[in-house]
Image (cartoon, rainbow, N blue to C red; front, side):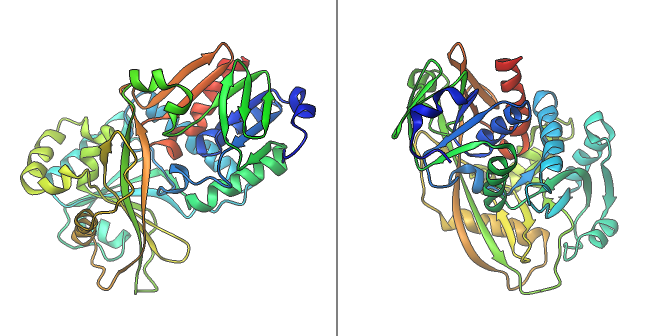
Length: 382
């Protein structure tokens, strides 16, 4: 760890990464795998932003076809490579999208029959309820995808950082705010670091490093409400992460199917409040048996940290429409944030000839960061 003599370390790094969330760690890994000497500067004592306030769900099926899906497939492969060496438990593999409505099942069938559905299986209601315990019997069916994996984000991110430090000799400076980038120098609260290249991964703090860029791409913030539930049934186990009909309206890979138009019409008629609050259902299970459940989406030009009971009720209502889980108890609530811009799912900008700013602006950081990091490092170091 760098704590004192910064000047003596100036010549020892090929790359400085600002930010130790999943995107910053992904860039550090990609560089370290090339044998480059890497330093990471993080303002907080540990990663505390969007990277540890999410499901830890590495999602492939449902991602938009093209670059986003390709990034998700590559990032999933990297997660599979590094999880065990880094001491990260993969808690669940695969995803189940449960269709409550016939229109939703039609979307899943179209998806499974196309190129993006390779490896996926469509099940009828009997097969789905046999696979997933406590599903409501009134469901129409489900799609099983083998591609996903799920980690506990709040544990995985610090373990990944410790592994990068111990195994790849990445130097971390925690609790030191980066104040600015000048060419390939990073000014911070403890002095200055120089390297051959700099990558800034600011999350939602793009304005701090590139205010004109933030204004040009109309930087906004998406707020998510999430919770952890205690399940009274000790034998309840989910073999995969579960999503539902509302997810089909949010994930572009599903929403782009021709049958999605009829599903959306029905959702508009039946789920107006849920759609207005960006609610859809993701249910993941932790090692202790508790469920991580969410989420919602509200957009604004500032960070809003207030949780709304109405929105929580809508999320829980969707949960109970899919599962028969009497007696579940909310034991944790939290707010997540991620940046949104007009620039698409990834914001990448040149701050100087060998300095880049990179942010995931679609909420897909856990799913796509490793591939984005590899692309950035390839562009800087060939």
